Length: 310
Image (cartoon, rainbow, N blue to C red):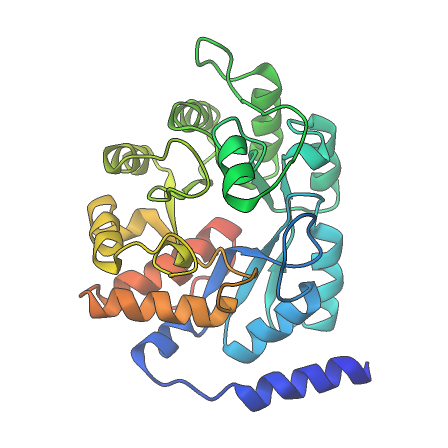
């Protein structure tokens, strides 16, 4: 406990109150996509507890713990007891380390209260070769696709989505291809699953084929949320133009978008600072404060079933 208190004090000592527009928007934000340690093959800044302390002392309202290798709900439950000032949610990612499209793993995760489900990421057929090359990995195993040769969702994916719908989970498409995203969206619409997120629409470093702007607009019209990560504009990530990202968001419509960090690893900024810089860059490109708040507060809270702040 003494070690935690020392860490807590260090964070408070470093963190000064930020009354700038970006700081006000950051206060109470919910990050649906961040990373923490331990995670195999990747270097991360903080563990789950340190992440919660960092979030609390930076003014964040909460976050989702994402890890490719295991269900994070048990950790989230423990951290919630120690740091009750922030909302901490667990997730399950259907990557190779958990057996891929593992229906039983989803059932087990739901039984523990897991709120967020990710389709395959590094092991996705749309991503595996790219991340192995760009990150110097040798993941082994087979790439995962969620559709058959005709583009139809595999039966196991339909079963998994049925569980997600029954338990009101948030489903993220992960790194699957645009064709697979549209298949997911069609099935979610059919069964009434409204909490679907499509991530990385502009990214070029984690998969072979990304959603186009036209794809994103079409998905948004169908009720899918489009996720924009702070990594997009960071020089440690995609290094995209903030103006281009802002234009993309405006075309899709802020009411259909969520802002996340995708941080937590090295050499990136910390989660809070990454979000603050992203928010600041969007403000400088002319985005309205209310629109950014919608994307970083209102929409994430709606997805997670949290009270929406006025």
